[in-house]
Length: 158
Image 1 (cartoon, helix red, strand yellow):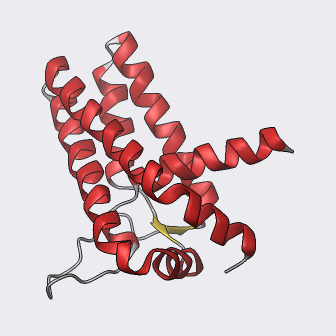
Image 2: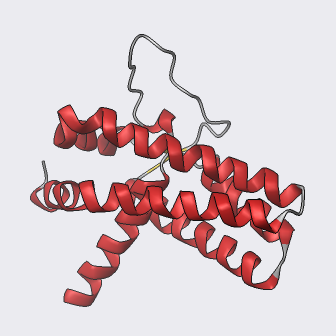
């Protein structure tokens, strides 16, 4: 049971760090929300699992110097499905006043995943690594701040 809970939490953390702005339909300062090219919606846990697969694909691409693999994985991170409406509601309710900071972390991840994709197209490993590190840090920032409250709310059925 502990092992399963740990896996779910790890997947949740990775996904939260990688979710795009459009997931939340959150409007700050009357700015239009960023829209992903992919209009598909997906429940939170399967989306996290897919994002974990995508970041692992980027890892494999970096270690094997396969720029096409990096491009695909980073592009999938940047242009992933949006979160299902029920999960969006849970995140918004749980984070309320923290949503602005959450979205800022998210935008860093989204932007740098796309920059990593572009660097892979250019076959520039130094730029890939630069944007990869920033993407990872964005995931960690989000995880360390928001994993616990969202996981708790999810388990409590809020």
